Figure 1 (cartoon, helix red, strand yellow):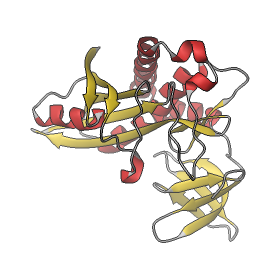
Figure 2: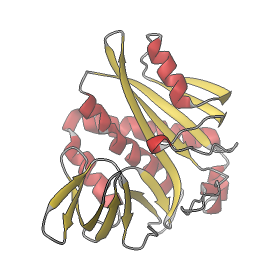
Figure 3: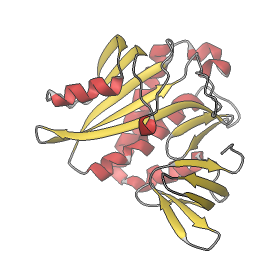
Figure 4: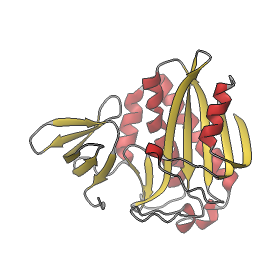
Length: 243
């Protein structure tokens, strides 16, 4: 796998998009020791402290951007495997759609961006893992791998190699067998299914019970009135989380 490494960059996703605009669609991974303009979901800042892992996989896609969007769940499983490898006693969980939590604290996040340049569709899979530093967020508990597995968190190259390897593994499963096994594996790593959930959307708040994932990866919520609502984007809070 081709790897492009930087000491410092605005963001690995931005570099992947620049490569695509020039006609380089990968497959490749862009990494950086630090980012000056890291971005998370919904345009939020991803605080990029030195010592943590910042990487973006750039892949060509066959034009089916809906299929490419479901790579979010492929990436979540890859990061889950990478982090859980260092943990004990089932501490690692996935929160819909792709936050990685350890003991309820966010340790990693994923941002997918896609587009088409020169007639070729592509997807950039941005991944940030807090290896040794956890940024201070007022409204969200955050942690770092070093707090749980200090020996393994120091080996940046080993964590990166494991991450890319697990992403390749789940990508092969997805390409061969479709989304169903990805969905099943994801549900097995996600707490809260079958329990209370609140989804805060742009113009409304949905309260109900988390039923599961539909075939496109949307979170299915059954409201108190019996209505089945599918959440494609939004902030989701399960029963024990602070809203």
